[in-house]
Image 1 (cartoon, protein in one colour):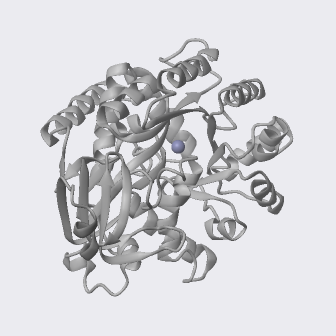
Image 2 (tube, helix red, strand yellow):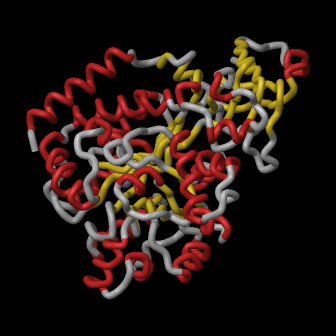
Image 3 (cartoon, helix red, strand yellow):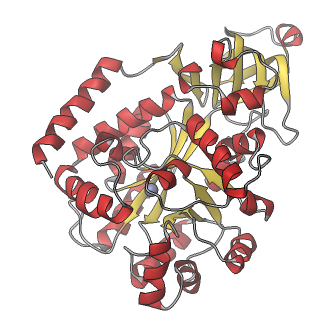
Length: 438
Ligand SMILES: [Zn+2]
């Protein structure tokens, strides 16, 4: 089956950053077979089975959300305007401990994936407990994902013995190791919640199975101070001594830096995931993205969980990242539109080790792409497409979403789940959380 996608604008984000006008994508099964001018497409391909016209749209690579905690979505708005530790320990964790079960995790994950699809997100990098239920939700939604298993030093409703986190993570790995769209990783929660012994166990298992490790790191000044007091060194130095840091390591947040840490990240090709809205809302600090990119460090971008953001909208996150860098550097040329667009596409693909498959629209890559209707008052007149995408496009302008050639959103309607079903889930769990009354 060959599908012809006619695009008014085609934003490739290939190495030449080509933006074509009146071009076509030729899709064969899950891959991009060709990219060529519309005028030539029908002549070259006579066996086309399906034609889709995006005649007022920008077609671009599917957006990637490099840091999520999907089940947190059903705690959106439950506890806001609090410091990170109080928010986690007094509000979020007590609810999670009471409410977490397979049913909650699966249903909140399906809901979150649907919300992300409507926002043009075709791939995400999650970390949470109950990874098998999140992986099942991703599989049932036909979306691309990495499912990371949380590792802590203490028990939770999911496991009684902390060693079982890693065992569960490896079980999920074994179940999905040959899956077309789903990969898995081991994700120690943070430097303050995981011991040296546990970090070493994670390192050994990740090496054995060639898995990524994703960890919240240097999120706040307080975390660094605490580590200096407890271990006599900063978390990055400690993890480096434990042999955890390498090109498979993803450090989420990183608002605190010393110059030698920048050199270390560059030398070891350690990835950084920037979550600007979560950092702003929890007043955690600011990641110096522009400086890191100038030093050749791969910096991706994620929303974090919807309990601390409070949305799963990468278009908004990109705008925030750009504006935040400008004020942080006192320089309006910081993080220009194209650089931030790269962060949510090809950089995020590199962070996840998927740059050969996704992150740009190129022949032989996977057919993960979205169409954005630019014929709205807020995106006209159209002088510069990338500028418009970052500074004035809203996610409701995403009309169509494809993952591996499958159309998952068509004209703003989800292919697999009804809005009524999803709203019913949100309401059901809101009532159950309210009944816990923390
Ligand atoms: Zn997080």
